[in-house]
Length: 316
Image 1 (tube, rainbow, N blue to C red):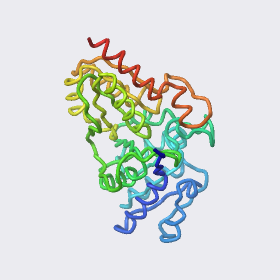
Image 2 (cartoon, rainbow, N blue to C red):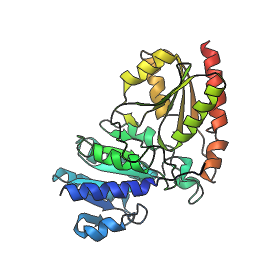
Image 3 (cartoon, rainbow, N blue to C red):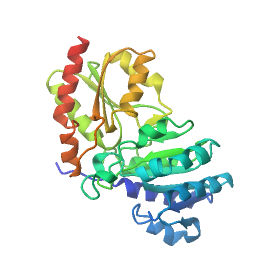
């Protein structure tokens, strides 16, 4: 069966086009990133609603703060690390602290950016950084259609929003028109309650394949998408943990700070369960092709299966 791709960058662009057609307060802020996010059609249609600043991410966030404080809703999309690291202070102090309605879209989230730009552009820290800043809503859609749906769903959220997108080579996960489950977990597949597989982002198809392989081996898994990382659906996660008693988190991020840490916090604060965390084990990945990198760093279908089996064994 051939792989169907669903470009998350085009999902962002298409979401922007629909939002701008519906309302007059949408503005696209670019830090020399218009081509990166396939934004040329937006510029052609609404040239007066594009602000190009050049390579100046800190200034870009400050401009977003000014626009948001004037009643507009700015969207700034560039590489995830340039936002959350280079402009971290501005995202915290000028947008987070006053709780302004600015939207930041971070491209090349995780190691799935792969071979084109290498390790300096594989951002495995962005979600962990923003989870520590009060007031941010953090969304991790799985494919292009979900990015578009997430933008539509999140436009009126009070306060700042961060949406993580990829390199443009993401596999399609959801049928066209699937709504984005804002603020809630989503059960993607339930074979049973032997183990819960929590995941988000661009590796959902791998987790679904692993769950099917586990079922063939007699281990009945529930696959749970946590597309809203903050605010976290603690109630929903707790219910799954209570049912399964053990879990594996799978994330294209450092295992410290993002999904694995969030589920561990839920477990520690009131939903006891055995937990294993798959992702970057506090290391930097090498450069390479996306699927090969995920396999090499413990996120292969086989490793998900083996880890789930071990985790079930610890529960028993």
